[in-house]
Length: 157
Image (cartoon, rainbow, N blue to C red; front, side, top):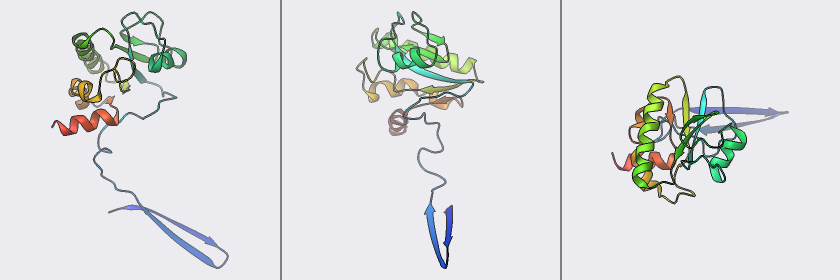
């Protein structure tokens, strides 16, 4: 077990505080997207749920439009510093869009895709429904999935 040790000395009193940080946990060996994404580094891509018409009126889609350059009218694919994933057109359409996203991630290994909990907000799907569709994405070095998706995928292994 390893950790970080802080020493603090003031006048004649020395305090020794040790905080142990596990080097391996269930999730730190996997690529987990942040719970909240407010800034993107160069080559990072914000993956959000959209509708096929690219009407980015609410939720993560609105945030992508206002902050990361998602273009109005682009409902699927790379747009600005984002990837629009249509989630509102039915289950089979959504699943096929996820497959196209995974193909895009494979074709763009220099980009890092930060996936939000797509489909689990306004579109109304549960994490248990959506996460399995990202199983192949979870194997890609350049795709970071939400912790909730990883937890479902770990249960299904």
